[in-house]
Image 1: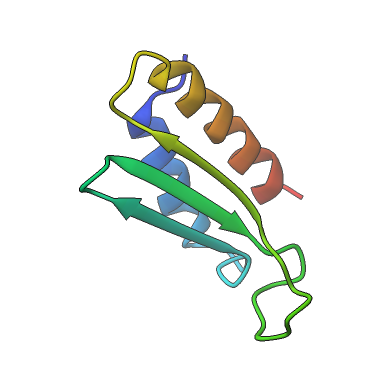
Image 2: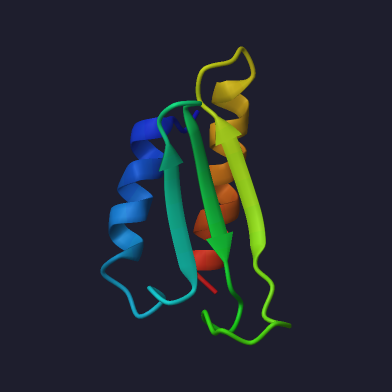
Length: 80
């Protein structure tokens, strides 16, 4: 099962690719939430450029399954 460390490692790998303008990763420490936004064609200020957004709260009973789901969603998009 993938965990938070695996997700953070994948984030580090993303930073070394040409996809940096497609992914935005944010951590909200006050609520222990990780959010990943994905812009299929890269970020732009155009109003119709809407991201796909997935997030997980890391401090609840379903966190491990949700972290794993977020990991594989992120990995699939990263490999496209």
